[in-house]
Amino acid sequence: MEELELLERLSNAHGLSGFEGSIRDVIEEELESSVDGIEVDTMGNMIATRKGEKPSLMIAAHMDEIGFMCKYVDENGFIRFVRIGGWFDQAIHSQRVILHTPYGEVYGVVGAKPPHLMKDEEKKNVLKAEDMFIDIGARSREEAEALGVKPGVPITLDREFKTMAGSFVTGKAFDNRAGVCVMILAMKRICELDTDLTVYGVGTVQEEVGLKGAKTSAFSLNPDVAIATDVTIPGDHPGVEKKDSALEARKGTVITIVDSAGRGIITHPTVLRWLEETAKDKNIPYQLDVGDGGTTDGTAIHLARGGIPTGVVSIPVRYIHSPVETMSMEDLRASVDLITEAAVRMRRYF
Image (tube, rainbow, N blue to C red; front, side):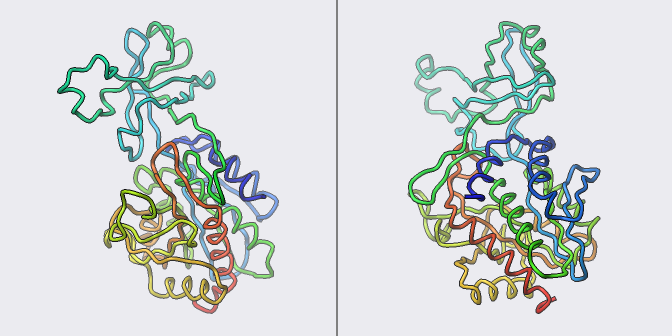
């Protein structure tokens, strides 16, 4: 199954914000035989172009994942770190991590003061990232430095993709390797179709730290229309009420109406009609989302230049920004179908 193998490859690869090279290599390898050209811009965004006529369509998916960066190494060889991207601190403790040094990968574990030695009052407090450290087994700063560990070294989680019951899978960095997978598969299918659209498949950088790559690539390309593909939060598991999220896994792709309570994107009405009518006409299962939480590359893209009509197509993913993100492959396939079919019908709307 092409999409399952591709998602596994993308999820298992490592690419902290600002260090997305290994993900970019996978995308280039997957798309080079389908598109007319691939380039990497100054920011590190990967742009695969299928040349054609107007209107032009940009399909964007951010390549980066959340992680950490070495801040300093103490005299005993333990590493203090900063968080890169949005973390819930309690998900960090006791994780195994990879430090990507100039000399190769170094494995470590995130540690902290053991609860057995904590006083009762300490046990009541939430453990914070600043109270944690990374243990790589080094006995001194010099020993750690000899392995290439120094300030600025990127750090990612050591987790592997696994299949679960039914159509579910779990792994790290589905935010947003699932979106990257959708972008790749949609680009391949669009390039096989008898359509003369100009289409840009863009792997953007540094989304998790400020939507940076989307901003610069959208300004440079200035497409007529754009779709950002990402993940979103379903409310179909214990601890979440429908009023917080009515989305569900295995119920289809998600079309955003509004995110971040309007502080992010408010989807262009023509784009919304285009995506929703395509889903209905092609019997593609879909859900509509009005969110008050985070946002996506779509926010930066739709504000580029004089404004770019932009939509967001997402996959419901449980436990995002954790080492065990979980999703249904059915929803990924529906997202690929929607973007592909929408591209075919694009001239009816723009």
